[in-house]
Image 1 (tube, rainbow, N blue to C red):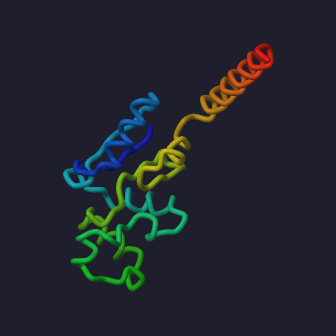
Image 2 (cartoon, rainbow, N blue to C red; image 1 turned 90 degrees about the vertical axis):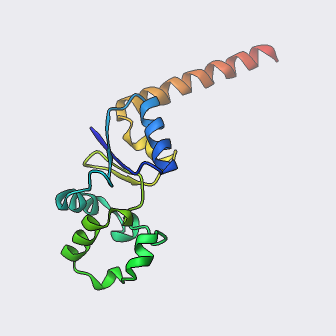
Length: 141
């Protein structure tokens, strides 16, 4: 099951939700402001990042500017506690299935959540369609 962490006013969050719905993928949506992440959830997200805090922290957010801190000066546990207390620090949306993580909405990257069997089927179907079109064009020439 895909977990979709959002905030209500986030346009990218709405796009991600619409894409997942249209793709027919099961997901559980959660507003990180009305139902903040637990320490364990934050640790899980951090464990899936490729670049650590840079990937999930919004350094352009008002919360980050207001706190005026250097994240490099914090221990891991201090960072987790800071995020737990200030969910506005997180970039949104955050999507994870426990193996993969996507932060922000990117239409190319979100396809990683489509099951491999479906992606392979779609690729084969597209190849058949292209072959058919090519044959039709040759017949017309």
